[in-house]
Image (cartoon, rainbow, N blue to C red; front, top):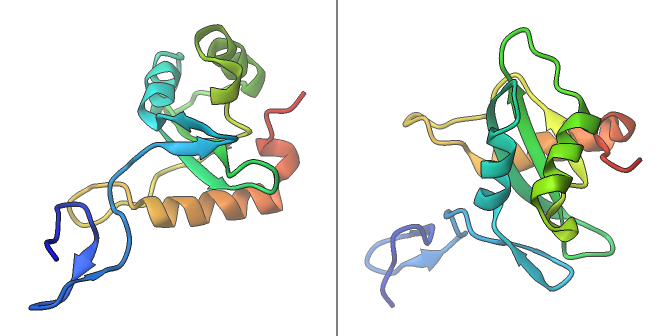
Length: 137
């Protein structure tokens, strides 16, 4: 068995696949959704310094889309305004179920966002503050 870059495999001479480490597509109700496409649209909204789109487990659909954003210093991002922007540029099934505001993203020593930790933090914020993060009107 050969290991491929991004496979999360470890061990020598035997390799054990542990987890996928690349940023792939999320799945929502049978639709493949590219986080990068949504991130590109979010990045065009004024006042957002950085953003990451992740998929979290959902009860009805396979995954729910969650947009994690870091506002520029001193900026307040309106969920309604951001959602209006997204609705004008994305298909309805690509719209996030939650927008989570953060001060920073967890990063490793080389500065890459640690997606597993980001998902854990976002899930906890949503669990404790669903009325603040929800994009449902």
